[in-house]
Image (cartoon, rainbow, N blue to C red; front, side):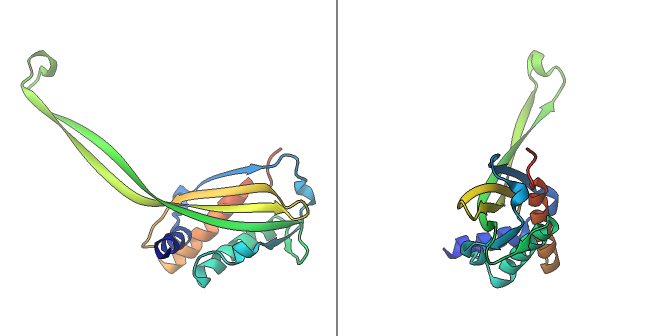
Length: 176
């Protein structure tokens, strides 16, 4: 559990701005123009991060929703849920070199070697779900995935969170 919380922390605070991949999905029958107010779900308010980074994420989401014309309300049109996921990824790159005299394919005279380089990194995904409060039904989900930089400064962490959330909300409102 402690390792999972660490990975979740690292995911949110250190996503690299330059490599955020975003996608979204939505219910095409939802009336997105009618949604004007929001509130966070209890799960989002208790996101398993330290208080500083949880507040950074929720503030970034609040700011992007406000930019889209939403306001916080006690009786909202939509509920906003936030989830995070992190996974270890490993890639392998093979490089072949040929050494020796010419006429490689005619009579041999040389040799080749292949070098394999392995690269391990953590990839994290931030999910932002929009749930129609009246129907209790998911109507939109935005996702942002990026490589994590565990050595990011405090300032860079905040910039990365804001950038990732901003990129996710470029997919809202959906184009019907």
